[in-house]
View 1 (cartoon, helix red, strand yellow):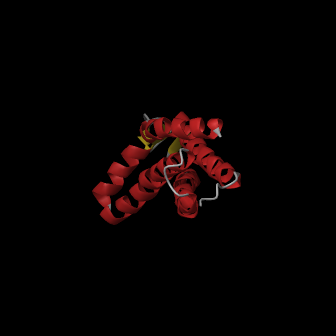
View 2: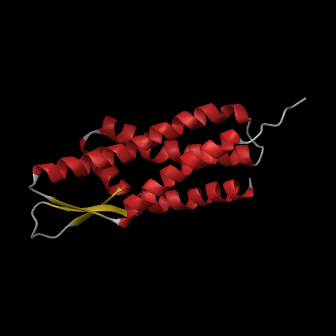
Amino acid sequence: MILLRSMNLLLLVLYPIAWFAPLMRAGLLPFFGLSEISVMTGLQSLWASDIFLGLVVTLFALFAPYLKTIGLALIHFDLLNPRVEKVLEVMGKLAMADIFLIALYITLTKGIGVGRIEVAWGLYLFTFCILASLFISWKTQQRPVKLED
């Protein structure tokens, strides 16, 4: 249980790093320079062009995984009722939507053939955070629940 607590608390530090880390480098043509794209720069672009989509992606990319991590920490320290785990599980599944979206963007851009995309270390960190969160949730659900009088 101590390992789960530590891993989960580490995610509270790793998530913000992953949000600002470069997910990919993209450029229009192969011989021009590449621009770094992070979760935050992507969100800034979305907010500038489509407020509703920016709000939805912000919810799934930032708030859902972070609130889930905080909720799991509260459960691990017996500060939140374990029955809330089902809600946290749904939040974790919603957070996986970002990885799908990023993969879809990379696939579409590479398929067009006009631009160039290079995956950066932040994509691996962000993917690790999401998968680690899913693992922590799964292990938390497997632990025996204390019966209250």
